[in-house]
Structure formats: structure tokens, C-alpha cells
Amino acid sequence: MPSIEIDLGQEEARIFPLKPHETVVGRNPFCDLLIDSHGISRRHARIFRRADDFYIEDLNSINGTYLNRERVQQPALLKDGDTVHFYRVSGVFRRDGVPFQGGDGGFGQNIPIETLTPANVVRTSTRTVPAGSSQSGAVEQRLHAVLRVVDSLGRSLNLEEVLANILDGLFDVFPQSRRGNIWLIDDETQKLVLRATKQTGSQTLCSESLGPLKMSIADDVLAQRQAILSVDEMDDDFSESIFDSHLRSSICAPLMGPHDEILGAICIDSDDGDQPFAEQDLEVLTSVSAVAGQATEYARQHERLLDHAINYAVEKERRRRAEEKLGIADSFQKTLYPESNPDVPGFDIAGAAFPTEEACGDYFDFIPLPDGRLAIAVGDVSGHGIGAALYMIQTRSYIRAYVSRGLGVAEVLTEINRQLCADMVSGTFVTLFLGILDPVSRQLTWSSAGHPGFRLKLNNDCDPVNATNLVLGLLPDVRFESLTLQLDSGDVLILPTDGVYEATSTARELFGRDRMLECVASARQSSAREIIESLSEACRTFAGDNSLHDDLTCVLIKVK
Image (cartoon, rainbow, N blue to C red; front, side, top):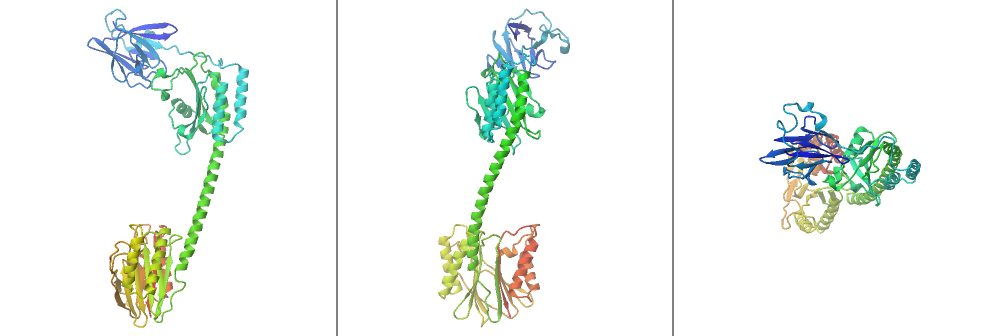
């Protein structure tokens, strides 16, 4: 009947007859064929019968099942003489292996699996090196090599050089080494990242771009905080097939910092079957890793300090330049606001701007005319900061140029709109209120491009001064209109930007126009300048910890 002939090493083999229907192979004592070997899963694979043929199937094992050195991904037909690997345990399928003896395929009919004799247990012949009998070389040579490693670690504070010195030195200490890796725990992700790697005959590579890379033995070292010796161990992270590599042993130790914190891990692999790593090698690596960990931490601290110093210097210079530019812009912009409030008989007029940044996109201006009238402008460029401030300066220049030519307010806005449509970036616009006050007739001729005003009467009733046209900078062929407002004694004309009544509290509530009018009404006996300051303070108090996101600007005209 069909059987599997298991290779026990040292030219020893044992034949195990297969059950007629299914034989489960694994490390679990309840398996039909118990393989007591590291790397074998509890339920590793099964061999089952379908009609007159036998098939092998992997049961999602960690290290894989192989048929003729090809990993089994789905049930595969077995032929006489096929080579089967359960991870590293090899066997040969025999179609007619042993004579049929009846019952349940030679395993003992109706006998519980856990009572089976050791005849059904495979113990692989992993070579064991006795503790303390290292085969890495003469003790004296190794001692000198270790001392060279330790000595080299104090010569540099460059992290890459330190890591390279560690691996280069360990390859001298352990001449059978094939590959060495150093993982460090990333400060941000707290995961292992491969920072240095070396293979026999090549230079050590050190870079943050080498990882992250999963390494089960390194993970185990960190979890247990202990060094690990693994003989006849396979690292599947570097190979899809166990036949691509012939590692026989590996030693891995944690890198411990000055305060007993784990920084990462060092792992050295060897495929030298004649000189596998031993317990004494592990002790040597542990001793070296203790010193190497401290050198690594000092180098990392030095690296962090350099990074902080460089970043601080760069940021400091960037801020200095930015503050210098903003200071120039702020100083220049302030020269563009009126130096003082106008002195107009029968009126108390004041204006003020309170920017949220060093540069402001709000605008107000008083332009005395030769005939005694006063042009009054209040504007707001969309957005804020340097860009908005530059457009504000441009708008101010246009206003002053066209007003000085004697154009009416509607004509001025028409010409400015045409200019801004040609100059401004798409999506940017300007709201503008422009009026000319005649102090003799107490009439205000005005035109508004999307910028409202408010007339608070002596009895505190409010008449809105609504916008008459679209904002500036959107459509080039708009013709603006003007209106005339007759002002009476006790009137207070409020011309704010939207930053005043759109101030927002921490509860996301707007300050609103009603609160603005109430604030002005309660302070109407004060001067125009004092009313504006009270309004600004009320907005900031209302906003509380929620910082203002828009500039506050207001012109206020009190009629005596």
C-alpha cells in the first residue's frame, strides 16, 4: 500500500504507511503522522485519496509544503518517487511502499491517536552544538576581534558609521557569517526598520530606505527582551522557497540603550553546516550588543541634535526673512492709511483698520477735494495676507487717481472695475463703498460695489445702505450707479468690512449685524474713534479663544 518514506538524516529513513482515505501531517499530537520539528505547523499538510490516486495538500502552514521543490499551492497529484518536503523534513512517496495489513493502514485500528507508539513520531536530526563548545575559532582570536569591535564604536558619532562598524566587526568575530542585519525602532512608528545590512564579501549598506522589513526572529527578541539562538532555522522573509537558501543557524540579540530601553536588534545568519552558531556565540553577541546599543543610542542622539540644530537654523532664518518682508509690507501699508481723521465742520468722522495678520486686505481712505467736499472709501479684498494687501494698494491707487480727475463715484467704480478685471487673478474680487460728502448740504453721494453700510438714526432705528452693484473684478462691462443720501443731525453712518459682523465665537455663532448696531447705539455719545474701538473690542471679546480670521475695518460718520 502507498507510504511515505521520511528522511531522518545521517542516511536513516523510516517508512510510514498512509491511511486509505486521509493522512494528516503536523506537530499536533492528534495528527496521523506526528512530526516533532521546529517549523512544522500543528496541522501542516494532508495526503488524501481520490479514486485510485493520492494527492497532497498544504493546510495553510506557515513554512509551506513542497512537492519536487515546488511549493504546494493547491492539491497536487502524487506520483511514485515524488519528493515531498514538509518545510525542511523531506520524504519520498512510494506508490507500493509496504504490504497492506488490513485495518486502518497500519496505524492500529480503533486505537486513539494519542496512544500511538513513538513509531509514528518523526524527530528530525537537527544538528545540536553543545553549549560552550563554539566552533567559531580560537578563543584568543575571537577576544581580539571583540575588542576591535568595541574599540571602533567609540570613534564616531555618525550613526551609519557606527552601524557599519558593528556589522563589519561581527563578521570578523564570526567568520562563518553569511548575512548580518541591524534593525532599529523608528521614533514615529515604533516599528522595526532595517537600517544596516551586510552579506559575505560585500560592503555594509546603511540607509533609512532599507526598511521597514518584517523579521520574525527580531520580533521575538524584542518581545522577550532576550537573545535567541536558532539552529537549522529558515528565514522566509527573504525567500519564497526553502531551497533558495541554506541557512543553518542564526543568533539575534537586542540592542539595549543606556537606560535599559530596547533600541532594536542585531541578527547574524550562517549557512555553514560545519560551524553552526552555539551558545557561546550567543553570549559573545549579547556582550557586543550591550556596548553597541549604547554607541548606537549616542549616535542617534547626536543625529537628532544635528537635525534639530539644522531645522532650527533653517526655520529661524525663514522666519527672519518672512518677518522682515512682512515688516516692510506692514510699514508700507500703514503709510497708505490716512495719518489722521478728517476735520469736517458739523461731522465727527473716524476710521481704523485692525488686521489679523501683518498685512491687511481691508482698506479705508479720506480724500479731501478742492471744493471742500470729502471722498470717503471703504473696501475689502477677498482673502487676507500679503496678496490681498497688494490688491488693496492697487485699488487705492486707482481710486485716488480717478477721484482727483473729478469723476463722479459711479464713473470711478466703473473705471476701477475695468482695470481690476484685467489685472486680478481669477476668483479674486473687491467690495468697495465710495461716497463724496458735501458738508454744506449734508448730502452723501455714493455708489457701492457689494459693500453695504448702515445708517443709525437718532432714535436708533436703522436704515440699510444697500449695495447698488456687483463686486469689482468679476465682470468688466458693468456700469455702476450712484445714489444720494440726505443725512440728519444725530445720524451715525457705519461703513464696516464684513470681518466686523462675521466674527465667530467658540460656539460657531456669528457676531452679526444686530450686535454691531447695538454696540454702536450704546456708545453713540462717545466720539467716532471711541465707538470704533469699542466695536473692535466687542468683536474680540465675543470671539474669545476662537481667533479672528478676517480683518476688522470700519469708518464711522457722526452727524452733529
